[in-house]
Length: 538
Image (tube, rainbow, N blue to C red; front, top):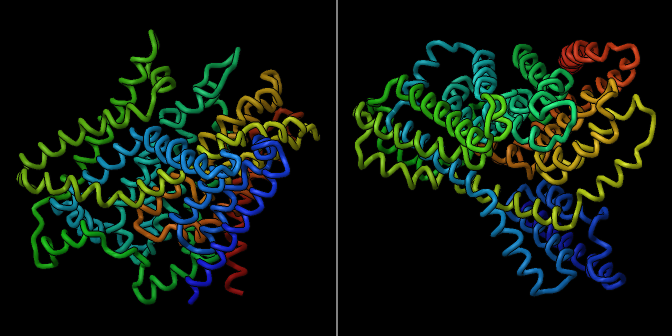
C-alpha cells in the first residue's frame, strides 16, 4: 500500500511538472525560459525528491531525464525522444565507456577472488585478528584511505574486501556504505596523486601556479574532506551513531539483520559451489596479490596516459595531464589478464572457472552501471540547459563582505553538486568563477579554491544521484536510498562545521592565521560528537 501511494505521488508530480513546463514554454519563445535559469536545476531536483519519496533510484532518474529533455526540446514530442535517446542515454554511455569498462573488470576481479575462496580465507583471518566492531570500522577506514588513486576503484574494492569482516562484527551494510563513501571522494580530493587531482589541475588557469601546485596548496583548507575523516574515526571509536543510522546499527546488533540486499546470481552460485562444508583453495595471499596487481597496473595506466600527453616533466606533471577514463581501463585490462594467469598457475581456479567469472562479474555490476548511466544522462540534460551559466550569474552577484565569501562559495558548490550529482562538473563550473572572485594575490585565494573543491565533494557526498554515492551502495551491496538517508545527517553535520571553518578562515585572513581554522574545526567535530552521544543517553 505504501509503495502504491509513493508511486501515485511520484506520477502526480511528474504529470504536474510536464503541464507546468508546457504552460511556461507556451508563454515564452521556445526554450528561452528554461536555458540558463533556475529551470535548469529543476530536473535533478525533481529526481532527488522522487528518489526520497519512492525509494527507487531508477525511475526517479529517468523522470528527471525526461523533464530535462522536454525543456531542451521545447515540449516537442519527437524532440524529447531524440534528446532522451541521443543527447541523454547514448552520450552517457559513450562518455563513460572507459569507466564502465573499468567497473566491469572490477566486478570480474571480485568474482575471481570469490570463486577462488580467497574472500572466505580473508574473512577467517580477519575474524581471528580483528576482534571488535571498532576494529572492523577502523580497518575499513584505513583501507579506504590507502586506496586514494580513484573513487570508483576505492568504492568497489573496499566494499568487496571488507564486507566479510564488517558482516562478522555486525556492522550494518548501510554503515559500511557510509564508511566507503566517506573515504572515497574526500580522500581523492586531498591526495596529490589521484584522478581527482588531475581533474582539478585541468580546470585551473593560473599565471603564477601550476594546476597540481595549486591543488596541493589548497589541501590544508579543504575542511570538509579532512573533517570527514576526523568524524569517521571519532564516531567509530566512540561506538556511537545517530539518526536513521542508529536504527540500522541497533537492528544489526540485536537481530543480525545487516539489511543486505538479496543475493545476486553470482553470490548464490558461490554459496552453492563453496558452501560451509567446502574447503576453499584460495588463501589470504590470493586476495592481497590480485589487489596489489590491480593497483599497480592502474597507477601505471594513469602514468602512461599522462606521460604520453606531455612532452617533458615528471610524475606530478603526468598525473596532472592523465585521463582516468583511458588510464584506468588500460591498467585494469592488463591487470585482469595477469590475475587470471596468477590464479590458474596457483591452481585456485581452472581456466573454465575463470571464464565463468567474466559474465558473473558483469552481472554483479549491472545495477551500478544502470544508475551511473542514468545519472550521467541527467547531468547531460542540466548541461544542455546551461545550469552553469545560471550558477555563474548568481555567484557574480555575491559581492558581500570579503570574509564571508569562502563560506558562500562552499555553500553554493554544495548545492550545485547536490542538484547535479557531480563534483567534477561542479568545480569545473565554479573554479574559473572563484579565480575571479579571489585574485591570486589575495590571502583568501587558496581558501576560496578549497571552498569550491570541498563544497563539490560535500554536495556529491549528499546527493542520491552522485556516481560515487551510487558506487558506495553498490560496493556495500545495500539499498541505495537507505544509504543516502542514513549518511545524510552525518554529511550535513560535517558540512555545517566546515561552513563555520570557512567563516573563521575569512575572519583570520587579515591576521594571516587562516591555518588556525583547521584545528578549530577538528575540535568542533570531536566536541559535537561527544555532545551528541551525551544527549542521546539523557
